[in-house]
Length: 362
Image 1 (cartoon, helix red, strand yellow):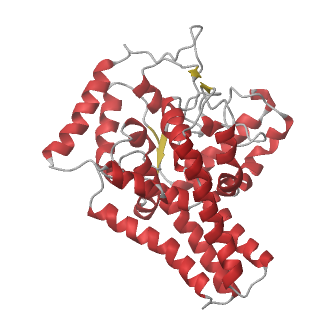
Image 2: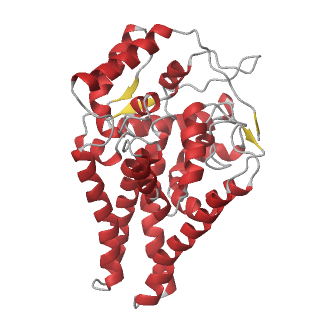
Image 3: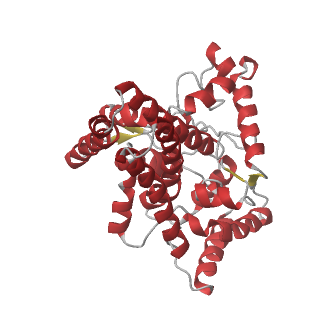
């Protein structure tokens, strides 16, 4: 396998990286805390899994009418996004537990939701976290041909309307995962900076087995057990996925595609001018730290700066270490991008879509 890799500057503000790592480690040592899940995280895990599979159980029992089923599909969508945010995400980063087996099995919750955990770890953990906001390397910038998420991408006439189209498209994100995206990434030879990427046989087997399992319990079983038509099942399936897709799609974009975040390009030598940790701060944004319910539900997604700098730390700890990171960033005059509320962050993403869609800015 060949790979076109980008290097980051290593001599940029070394003291910042050293001090920040030491300060965060001191926080856990002085408070005698594990960097992994605590009782609150375990409780959240149980609640979110119960929300999703409990709603599914009520649907499959046939004890509610069509409108009740439709509402429970909506609830499942909320639960699905929450599991992805708070359980799968931490587990697949190896942050949920110090036990690799626990992380591996909790990571399979991602597969139970219709997505493939193996390909996610490549595109998200490796590619996105390494090459954040670097066009043609960061796969998260390539949502669809009609959405331009980087000022370095080619501008097309359709992009003029992307500030409207994008939010609708986000609703289909998880459907795309379940039926197209994972297969596409498995079969294509080029993936981000990787060329001729191959995958272990066991991962091919896992892909097809888990996809069949997902289609079975989500589509085949309801059709066999419930007194509903195929198109009614289709509507329920769309409600679930559109709910989860909108939530996941919007929240993920608020971390990197907003007005303050940067989209660096390589220099003549093919390298990025900043050190990796500084690059993460410049390309990432936080939001709504005072919204307790949102913080609980989306895990570390509104603490993306903390997550990108310390992906091996469980998201339950991000609120506590955020003040440490902010102070160190201020000391070294490094940006700490932040929006006070969810609404302000969404507006910033909307304005960024308009800016990137304007041909005058191409």
